Amino acid sequence: MNNEATEKYLETAKKNVLAKTGKTVEHWAEVVKASGIEKVGQQVAMLKEKHGITHGYAQMICQIASGRLNASVDELLEMQFKGKESLRPLHDAIAAYAGKLGKDVGIDPGKTATSLRRSKKFAAIVPASKTRIDLGINLKGMPGNNRLAEEKPGAMCTHKVRLESAADFDAEVKAWLKEAYEKA
Image (tube, rainbow, N blue to C red; front, side, top):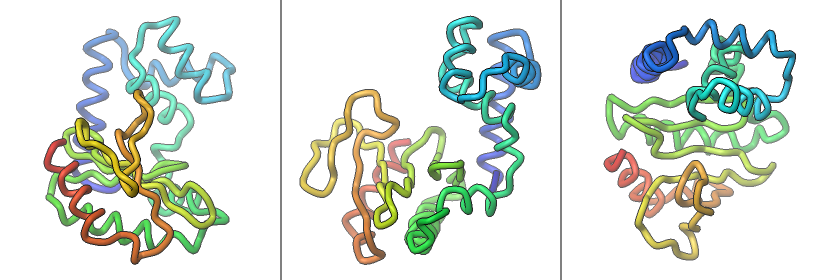
């Protein structure tokens, strides 16, 4: 984790898991490890189906069980951009811009994407291919257009913008990102 907002978010989530289940996140992480299930999706399903844990908390527990939350930011970004190194400067430019939107922005790299959070996720930076980043943006209720493609219902973000170069991360995309931050 890389900043104060992210740490605060995790601590709140851990307290909520304890309050809702009566058991700590560490307990649930041990349940995941003891299950012998290796795929995260199956681990999440097990926690949801057998133990009634909600999807978001189940995801967090599985990340803790795998040790991914103990990985450094550099290690996580290295995983994300393996074979896609040319896209890293674009990722860094997006993250830097997002960080300037407010002191409460959490920039949370994971194994496959970087989440941008305020009180909730407002965007995600996803290295989708060797030549493109898909910037997911939460702009509920906004109609899509040629650049701002609407995602399927239930997706992590409501819209997606395809970015292939720093020039694609222009004033229009920055305005959408700022609007999503303000709504979060």
